[in-house]
Length: 375
Image (cartoon, rainbow, N blue to C red; front, side, top):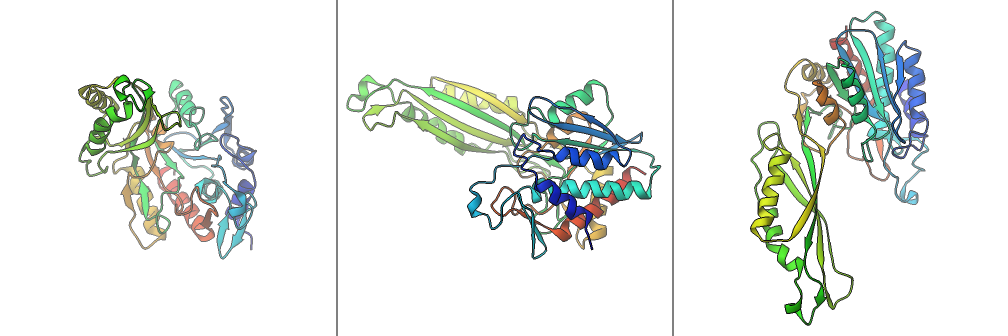
């Protein structure tokens, strides 16, 4: 007996859609949606392909996802070629199986069943698909959202199919995400010979106190929805490679994952003040990847929780942990946003896989959410 979800997921996995190359995935999805009566609007920006598709009118529930995947790494470490989908022991293997071509297949098939059963649904069902989520995320969802906002498109609810689940599908629903702020800092010194330190100024030595204080700082206590803000040094570099040269500058990169208790402006001010207190000669280039967002209990969260409870003997936990997602851009439209997808244990790893049964379960959950919000 054939399974439409698995068949579509396998079609998508076969496409080597390394970000931001869509490799034909969106054409497959668009054809399926067009057959259901969806209006398909391509929105390409640069090397990124995006589609905005909708059917019906009224309160809008959008399903969002990405067709791009991360690199496979050394393919000899995979048990099977990463772009040759393989079903083994009820698991579907392949790059993108869990993140997130399996979710996309579950969404599309859910829409097919929903439209077949409710061809005259009252609200608007929509899809926002990009090929630039795993890379720079500059020409993908963020650009589509800008276009939709400029023409005052309505978007009430959005479900992002990111792999949110931990141990079993539906055990965690993401109803928000932390913000992400990166600092690229250069501390200036004076290069010289290590035997004559009085004629030089070692920026590594000068910065150590400031970096130690930066690491030890408690930025906030979090709140009932968010854990405390964290800061991690990601990269650090100094020196010429020679053992007898005092470096002339120190390069440090650090990232904040911050809650709604802080603003990015506050973080910047506190970091700059700390560096100045230590008397450093420095410059910092800041990069804000996304603001924190939160969707409180309401129609969308309740619909997602009920859908999980209907098919699983559990009540999902609402969490805001993990990395960023395109939900941060969609939340700008004032939409309620949640993430509900497969188990994330193998994402971005060798032998990435997803349970075939989980994809079918997930598709039923998606359909039930449609029935609660679009009928």
